[in-house]
Image 1 (cartoon, rainbow, N blue to C red):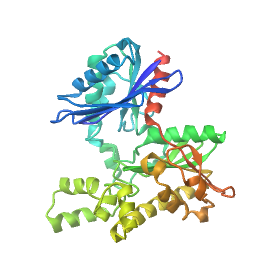
Image 2 (tube, rainbow, N blue to C red):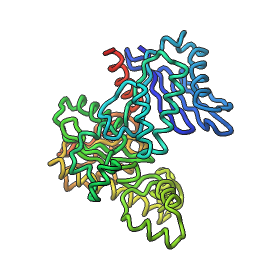
Image 3 (cartoon, helix red, strand yellow):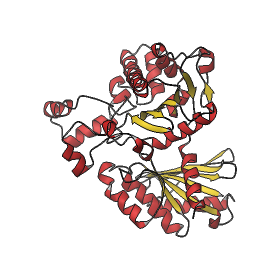
Image 4 (spheres, rainbow, N blue to C red):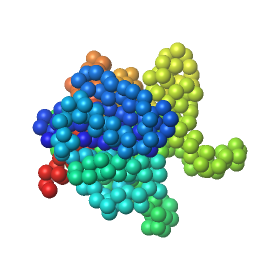
Length: 394
């Protein structure tokens, strides 16, 4: 069976088509600048890269080009060969605890939840509607970033603010990257041959989050109401004293929207280093003696270490720490900086094993009480698996 995994943004559309009999990637790609001038797409197929600049008036145009390419390249001979489409959605609120089939009610709920994810949910709906228009009879699902975190207990998701805010406006911790953390949980459980694991999953990319997982269920995570909370990220600040916001608004004569934009897009590694939001650029700057780059790296590392230590205590110990996503999978020096500070927890890194990128591998020394692993994430495959499971039940 062939399943298409889709991640739609407000001006982008990322896709991967899987042959689920062997979970093989048949084709993948990214459409960018949808609804903007200079539309562009890149498609990866058979080890080659196909790209072009075209007018992408809306998501439906992008979907049509995508499907035309699938036929033109003979990846499929008919659109009927696409057995299902799975859509990634950022925010499912407290409504959705698992993947669901798309219905009109589900789409209405996604839009109703848009205030909790104003940049994401409306964009996801654009993608859903574009595919429904072109493939009206193909079963489709929604896979939520927030679903895996719905097992978190109230004492970990309720904020210490007036309780009425939770009742009236759903102000609470939701967490994100749930599809990735769930994939890591399933994979490391299979590798270690047991499900009764205490896992600290570190999804470290331009956006980053950490999750505490026990017996396959998430009990805590770093991101909150929005993806702004938690560890230091590429351009997001992570946890800060909220009183900074009114203080800097008065000092710089800024609006709340301007401050919000700064905290999301001009803070984190970028804001401190003044160089880049890309960890590789910041590491290069630090190696060349840029003190602000070194400070940015130290802040990032310390924020990750603090949460690992907190979750170690919360879990009552830890069996395995997993690193994943762009930095987690490729940042050899970053992983070492983090684990070198975790000796008190009994975690030690083997430098030779750690000299690896993007490959499932144990990184810890033989005498490490806490195992350390690199586990490449695959959210697209998780979406496809969920979609296959649901449509097989129909």
